[in-house]
Image (cartoon, rainbow over all chains, first blue to last red):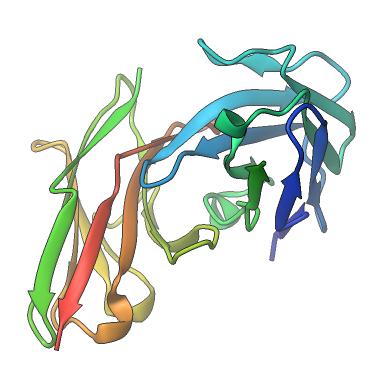
Length: 117
Length: 113
């Protein structure tokens, strides 16, 4: 079945540094991927839509200069948190959608826990 | 536009009792509906989904949900709670060809021995 791999699963970084999170579709091509953010004890909020070969589309209120998204190939999207601050600490989850209703809904990554100290 | 409302941020049941987690949605087009479970510090696991066809959907771990269009609801049930069901549950709505998911605020299920 369709699998989305997310790496790393957790990362600790110092304030002011940048962190890159990778999202890969392992056995299918994904022209579109999505990035979600989950604050502690809250729900998941869509941050941006990542489009292969073009600019990402950001949801209202998400700083595109802070959360850089690159979708350079049909199987890889990256989210870079630039100049990270403690308030960026969160759980980030990516999603991709392969073709076919049978796979729809299964393809979330396992998440990345980012802690900025 | 799509949105999801989950009634009850915390639900507590006794082991062996019925589990009922409520979800109402709003969608301007026919929705796809999902229930996910999340254990601490883990990603999302799909419990079940409704896309088309039968409105009563059975999922993993004994859970099921019924899509009721007239009530715009997709409540999650399980006849008999197990201690291992203690987790947070998210209802989500999506729309075909758009592929974005909109999540409810989540319901944390506590199962008492």
